Length: 195
Ligand SMILES: C[S@@+](CC[C@H](N)C(=O)[O-])C[C@H]1O[C@@H](n2cnc3c(N)ncnc32)[C@H](O)[C@@H]1O
Image 1 (cartoon, rainbow, N blue to C red):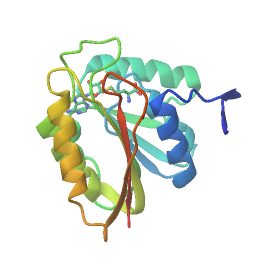
Image 2: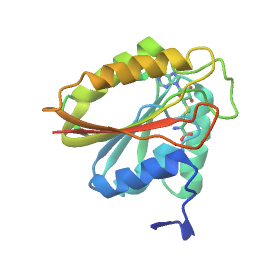
Image 3: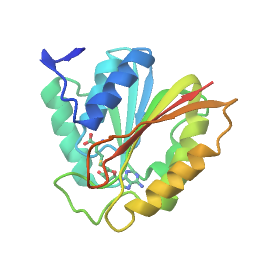
Image 4: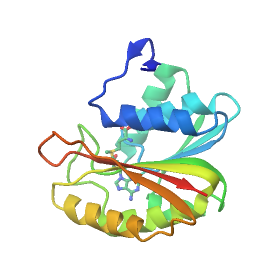
């Protein structure tokens, strides 16, 4: 098992698995996008992959997320490695050229510890996903953590999975994972690779 910061990773933490897969599949020093910044854990991870040569863009609609992420990046010594954007990921194409990104991370839902009523929404998530596909370079990958439950979570999950299932296998390899023995609608990690 790979060690993260000198500790065995927490196997029940879905984001840890996502980071492991990204680390094993994507180049370091590339261009990475965190489409749902939240408290900055994925942004910080992508900054560690970016090193001093790569670039990270991170999106969130909440100022609170940008503040928390700024603080985390400073604490980890990554200040200046990421550009934090307070805007919806559905506008991703205004900031990112087509076929440019090595990795795009989506971690849908609400800000942990924040206002649960401010969460990703089915229609904007779908727009962001389709724009993300265009932004990925050939050989690039996307990691999606899809949650269900709450007011819109089930609709979002169905919409995203239905959309992903219809994508051509000639263009994308898409792998859906699941927890077999966890109740309460566990998150669904999906990994997508652009050919
Ligand atoms: C589950 S949290 C992300 C967790 C985060 N990646 C981390 O490492 O802490 C989901 C985030 O998506 C944000 N969000 C909601 N709608 C959004 C949108 N349209 N564009 C970008 N972010 C959005 C929420 O504000 C929330 O902070």
